[in-house]
Image (tube, rainbow, N blue to C red; front, side):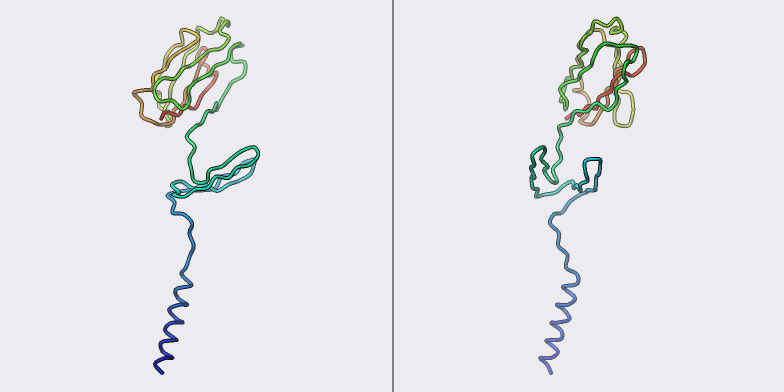
Length: 165
């Protein structure tokens, strides 16, 4: 009789223990799903262990954030019939950023200005561009994402997403 109780208790405990088992490969702080025209993926932030998957045209490090990013998020074609292009480097930046106007032979080049905004849209800096190369100091700003808008006669010509480390 006693052995039956022990066996029954063992089976019940084992049965309850198995119903609550769940497998987890990583403890993560956050994550989500992303999809686009090229496919979809799941991502996580704060993953302790990660794997790198490489293909012929790209590689992905699962759970690892890649801080290097250069992007132009808007560009207005033929704004004021301007014949120049604008580049910003380095990005990400730690202190100084170089804003270059390429092919500055256009007569409208002296009407250019730049505005620096934080991620909530607050204007931080507004300056006129006097030469074909402007040095912008970001040393006094906290590490974050900023937006640099270049305007020609108060019309936005090009905008850049700037990452400050």
